[in-house]
Amino acid sequence: MAELKGVGDKFHKAVFNAYFVERINIGKVDELIRLSKSIALPEEEAKEVLKSRRYKGEVDSDWNYCYAQDVTAVPTFAIDYQKAVGFQPYEALEPLFRKLFGLIQKLSQPFFKI
Image 1 (cartoon, one colour):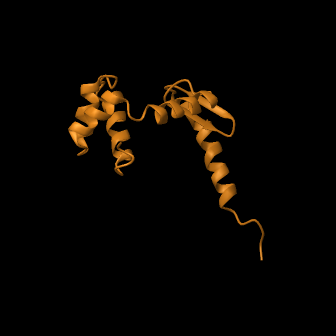
Image 2 (tube, one colour):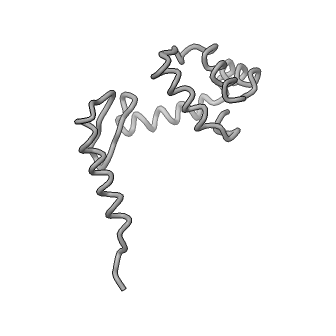
């Protein structure tokens, strides 16, 4: 619903903050409705969407994609066939992001010189 209304990023940020910062149980319908309201989504529509499971097919598709990619925890960082799964210290993430920045630099280089 949030994505269709153009506020998907706002909703994802609100849920992320609620879970990881405020330690709120985002598995509770009331909390999801509260988060929906916090980004100006209609409360009654949010309730209906959650009760009817209107987007079950889309959610199941996302889960299947994650399983196919072997994503088993959040966050998962996957860069060039290397992964860091779950909470990781800086030392574990630094090599992955150095690799990512190296790939970005390669891609930003011209293919040939004139």
